[in-house]
Amino acid sequence: MRILRHLLVLLMHLVLGSGAQRFSNGYYYQDIIHGNGNGNDNGEIYFHKIRLHVESPETLVSAVQGSNVTLPCHYRYEPALSEPRRTRVKWFWQPVSDEGRERDVMVAIGTRHRSYGDFKGRVRLRRSAPGDASLFINPLQSDDTGRYRCEIIDGLEDESVTVHLKFRGVVFPYHSPRGRYLMNFHEAKEACEKQDAHLATFEQLYAAWEEGLDWCNAGWLMDGTAQYPVVVPREACGGTDLAPGVRSYGVRDKSLDRFDAFCFTSSIRGEVYFLQHPIKLNFTEAAEVCQNDGGRIAKVGQLYAAWRFVGLDQCDAGWLADGSVRYPIIQPRMNCGTSEPGVRSFGFPPKHLKHGVYCYKVHW
Image (cartoon, rainbow, N blue to C red; front, side, top):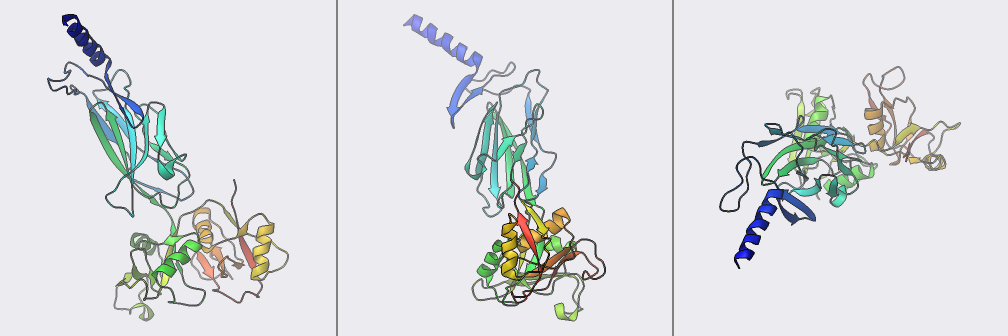
């Protein structure tokens, strides 16, 4: 019995000396003892005069849907360690639409890692230098925005930092082919999605107003309000007595009330181009020639994204997938519309009329 007790004590020293291992989430973790403070009678292991710091040089990162992004996260010790340590890195994500609930993105220990859910195959750690736990996401999907938390765990000590991801994009007004103020909230949401976009948030519309968006027709926003941005006050837009700003009708009935829509797009996953063709085309012919060219007729959101992010400048009116005719202008000039850059629109002309066409092609 006495020999058995000696063996147990020896075994405990060996285990503690090499670091006590525990198994969780499919990985082994090691609680390593530091310095002179090896623990206490309760079996707790703690750090002695060494502190773990987790930091991010950017807590707000902007990106474009369809591209890639790196969310910065770095950790270090004070005082600095002479040898690297075995740490656990875990990233969490809290979507914009799901306040209060975090979801797992990935976990990594050394060279081993595991990603979760829709992030599988799209995320990895950058590891460009010691202490670099930055998260690389490629490609960015439409619902990836939100709050990300980088957590570093070393033994019983853990620290974390948060990074917010938002999309750079462009807001554009959109109305039904049948006319103005004909869509309820659900129809407006669907209309934006059909044009490779989403209903804009108030923050996105406000940012667009700050950049000069001036539009006198109220449109649905994601929060169920109907609003419109005014840069130059005028009688037709609420009167000249009101200051410039984003005017609001407040929260409306999503089924009964009808407005236009403000859509937001942040996508550069493909190429939008004006198809050079010897003759002008009706709508059906336009769709066919895009397909014959290896693409498809472009959507409104795709044309706006090409105008904003790629600098597409074409003074030729062309069909789009919704039956509208538009063209993008970066450098205003004679016979190309107004004196301001933008996407010009001819509305929804009869589909038998002849115009050019804008095509969209994905390059794999």
